[in-house]
Image 1 (cartoon, rainbow, N blue to C red):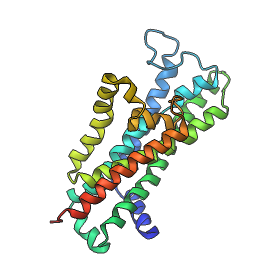
Image 2 (cartoon, one colour):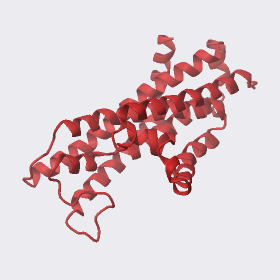
Image 3 (cartoon, rainbow, N blue to C red):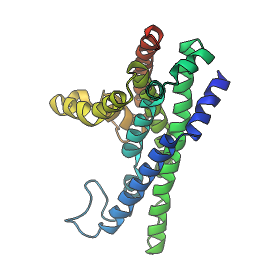
Length: 251
């Protein structure tokens, strides 16, 4: 199994998809973080939710919270795991090398979870460089404390689990475009609608509820409960994907 996981990580290192998504996410986070500082003095232009002045740890943590962006990118990454192999017609070779399909799916979940965590670390580091650099250059204090460190440490956990969740979608839906659209649509459309129509349900949904709780942004649930809830959803979607993959004919 370790060799299979290593193989998945090697595939990710040698494909343009991972690097392309990482560059896009990092660039977006750098831009948004810089804009929060640049527009902070103008109340009419300040980005919604951004602190106008960085004075407390809570202010800095708000600026450095890139989990929403990074999680969406790693979810899309995971959604290409098996579906991408179907698209490029390499899935038959993969299953010939490892006939036990369950092992392939589990290895992809593990490998993409690790890659998703690394993804989160890189994107978060870019936000930290911009924020700390801006505060230092302008002579402001940097309220870097334990709550900020905790937020930085939890973001890679969320991005890693999101990538694993995406693999589950990819295992259940062999078409790459469909898998990506389902993942994106669930986070950006379905959960938003469900949360708006049934507010009490929002905190129990995978991403707007459990996902935000993992990074400490949902105190009603808590980090540990949010982690347990998201892992439960992850296991369910992976189980569904395993069943679909096991029964699917490979052309």
